[in-house]
Image 1 (tube, rainbow, N blue to C red):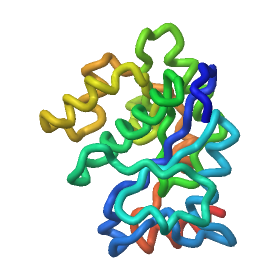
Image 2 (cartoon, rainbow, N blue to C red; image 1 turned 120 degrees about the vertical axis):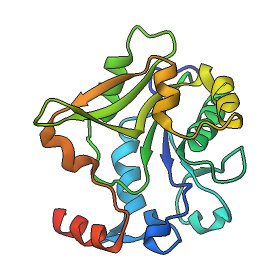
Image 3 (tube, helix red, strand yellow; image 1 turned 180 degrees about the vertical axis):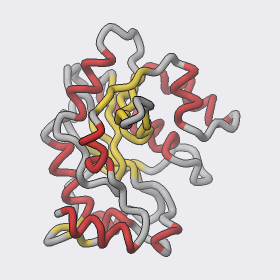
Amino acid sequence: MNATKTAKPLGIILAGGLARRMGGGDKCLLQLGNETILERVVVRLNSQVEAVALNANNDVSRFSDFDLKVLPDSIGGFLGPLAGVLAGMEWAALCGVTTIVTVAGDTPFFPNDLVSKLQCVGSGMKYPVVLAATQKSNCSLKRHPTFGLWAVGLRDDLRKSLENGIRKITLWTDKHNGREAIFSESDTENFFNINSPQDLMIAERML
């Protein structure tokens, strides 16, 4: 990609975890209906962003069938999704793009208006940090921390935070006065993530 400014963020699919509850391997490569989970995530995200990359670790050749740039964590040790956010930020900085949007690689039904809502809430922030959240029936919020809008200009701070032991996404976002883009309770199913064989069966029924 040429280093040009764009109003659209870059999209980062977070799939750098170890998938222990699935017995290891890549959850995103599991078949869901007639497509892999990853194929479904790419299609849903691609229409909302400038370009899509995949955060994944170890041998990246397993994704050779996909027309995707693969970004391994730039800090070793499988430090969790924040390390994937950092990898995405660093790629975006090279591309001259000021924001990224992340989605989870095991969540194929996320909203089609995810990016526009995140951007709307982040409007006016010097360094936008916005997480998706759903409104519960008791009026409390459930945050979905792997679904967020992130300012690339905060990448050095994020790297230092990771090096200092920060792993929980909301600890870092709260530090930067992060906001929430609130989706209705009816959108809760859109953030259903596949963590186990039982979840995969549920996702098949949801199709």
